[in-house]
Length: 429
Image 1 (cartoon, rainbow, N blue to C red):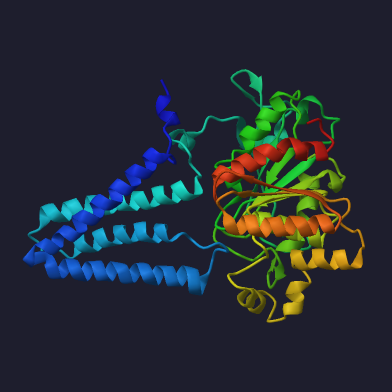
Image 2: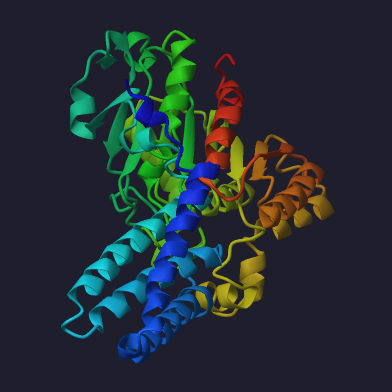
């Protein structure tokens, strides 16, 4: 009855549809070159679309650099087709109503196709049903959570609460002043059915661009935690996805710089605020910090700079080092040109220093590095960092899973490490 929900948006059929739409759109656009009346307008529109696309690429990839990872060129190409169809439509003579309508339809299709290309690459929505996923927890604001005296229910069974939590580092007792967006917390049924339990915490961070809710939407963190609690008498780690960027496209590189004291926020304020908001295990050595892409890089930054803030980490597809694009750009923009200041907080250099000093300050830390098998830069970076972490006394692993730099990888990565993180928190695996 709901077979439509399982229709894949990331398989070979989806790829064929995307290619077909792109090819047909291109043919509709260039067909204007066959008409003497439309040839000049069409040619100008095509050239202008190409120029706009190149300018967009240069702005995002070379000048602005809002994202630490490069956006695949195919997304720009798909967007360029949409721009080309739109320009061809708006520059047509008034009497070309039918062709204008046709081009507008294909401009819309090409725009949707651009979104489909992005989804194929990053896979936030693997199936049609992903847009309206079946709930495995009950969403609520923090005020409603405070009023609960028993676990929420769905279809007659106890489930967790997915709580929107104000967690900005701007309270009187916060140290960072970082104006973080709301966090999202999964609280398992045992929070109410077994209130004497001190549950460990898994703190997750999204990538850049991103927002905390992504871990519970595309990342399926709620489903993963629900599957765990369903076989452990309602017990699960509390899972909290927090803001490590300050905005959807922000890139403060997870450091303390200017007004964005992100490292202080994540290492000091987040644990303090979580303890204020929820009944948790106060021993932060039972806690795990992790994230995807930017969030993965950030988790290693926190654990190497503040090894007593968390006991474990999850680095999914993280970068070799915090970056705004290049080392020079990062140092100039975030450290006022002082490379020594950068090296003093860079995980690779901190691990090397610990190895040289043989200080053993990371010996209590455990962690997991995971990258998609086709994400070559992440595989190279995390293999190297895993080796350094082990030499510095950490107990770490590196694994590859099928996929690229996408939620296909990050969903599997979290599912594969959830029991381990629970065990690190003192729960049964």
